[in-house]
Image (cartoon, rainbow, N blue to C red; front, top):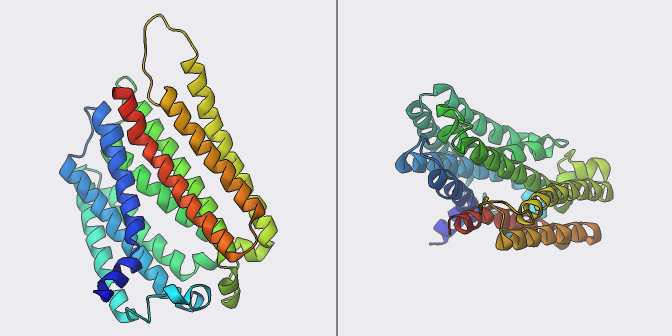
Length: 320
C-alpha cells in the first residue's frame, strides 16, 4: 500500500486531477454547451485528456529522477526516488507512460485529420525531458518552459476540438476561442509567477548544483520584484475584464441581453479573484523565509484553480 501511495505522490496525482479537470471544464462548460460544430466526440476527447495525463505524469517522474541531489537538500523528507521507488523502476514507468501518451496523442491527431498535430506530443515529451535535465537550472528558460506547457494543456482543447474545422465568426466559435485563449494566457502567467517563487524557495539546493536560476542570478529581492511585476500585470488584465463587465452591466439595451461572464455573481466572483492577486502581491512583498515562499507557491496553485472554476460558474449563470 505504501508503494502505491508513493507512486501516486511521484506522479503528482492532485496536479494531474487539476489538469484533467481544466480540460474537462473547457470541453463541457464552454465548447459543448454553445457550439454544434466541434470536432471531438466525448469519447475521443477523453483520449486527449488521457494523453495529456500520461505525458504530464511522465514529466513529473523524469523531473524527480534528475532532481535527487537537489531534493536531498531542499526536501529530503518528501523525496521518493531512491527511497520508496528506485531509479530503474521510475525510468521504466517514465518510458511506459510516454509511449501510451504519444500513442493516444498520435491517434487523436489522426482522427481530426491533422497528423502534424502529433508533433505537439513529441514536443511536450522532449520539452519535459530537457527541462528536467538542464533547463530547470537555467536562467529563466525553465520557468518559461513549464509555463508554456501548462498553457498548452489548455490550448490543446481548442487546437483539437475547434481549429480542425476552422473558426467560424458567425456562430460563436470565435468568441469561445478567445475565451479559451484568455484562460490559456491566465494559466501561463500564473504558472510563471509560481515558478519564479519556487526558484526562491529552492535557492539553497540550486546553489549546490551551480544552477543559474533567476533567484541565484539576480538575488531574492530583485526576483520578488519581477514576480510582483507579473502579479500586477495579471491584476490589471483582470481589471480590464471587470471594466467590460461593469460597462455592459450598467448599460441599458432595448432588448434584454445575456453575455457570458456578465452578471452580479460573475462580477463578485471576479472581485474575489482580484483580491487573491492583491493578497498574492502582499505575500510576495513581505515574505522572507522558505516557508513563506512555499505558501505563495501553493497560493498560486489555488488562484489558478479559482480562475478555472469560473468557467462552469459563468456558463451556469449564463444559461440559467
